Image (cartoon, rainbow, N blue to C red; front, side):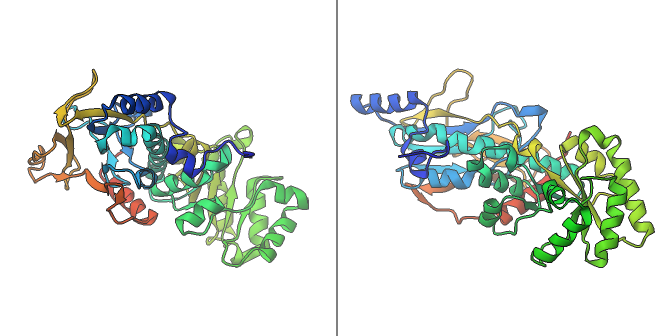
Length: 397
């Protein structure tokens, strides 16, 4: 079969062809020797990247699809849960657990962590940017920097992390939302004149799409913004500044100048959007000014992965673990009021919150039973709402 793109198919992933070879060799050995055993494997993370104090758990939808049809049970945090790496006493918090014969899932062990490592990293970076934006609108523009095969995953993870929209056509389709975007610089360069490009966009593109003019291609942002407003008037929804770093100077001051000049001429309804190399830090600074929304790309799509690992903690009902890990199956408990976490052996109550003195809630819940998904599939919008609600309990520090 001629492979046009370097991407695995659904069948190749489920069959184990994307596994590290040593897991497939392990499967063949335990089957040949007849020593396949009932185990409990847990997913945990020792520490979070970039000094993050919390992460957003994402990618569970694909993990459930991966385990569909395998004779195992899967327990997991709800997707969109914000978690620290360790509980109040310093114990690793389990994000997932797989229960069954090891040979039943060893061939997809690599895929299991791979599906959540990158998705959770992207969702966490998005949630941090959303927090930094202070309630202002944020759109995901990062798929152009990554392999197109994972564009839908990147868009879904950014949306779950709190972004209002995504630029990717397929990502938006799978999310059930319209794709978001304005116009690229080549459109204006092809026409040669800004007004001609803005007019063509207005005449051709569906009226339901907001009229947001790109105003930094040829001339000064302030004067292009004024020209766009004078051309389209009440029909202009906003302007986007994608000023390159080499010309940016004080970006916030440029934005404030544009806002002043538009307001002075009666164009208060025209919103200002900014994009181009933005990250958590720059969004935080710009959010203090008259910016209505942000287009954020590479800093989120290229977010550091969260290094989840999957380790055996029980074999045939007996606690075991490799060096550096804690043996025995565990439950993660969380306070419903302050979101403090406590890890306890499976089957034992987590007790009351050390801070609030209210009963803790168990967070690992069964999502697959003997290969059959048992939890109702949540929509991305519901998962996103969970993230936004839980962000209220967390700061960026």
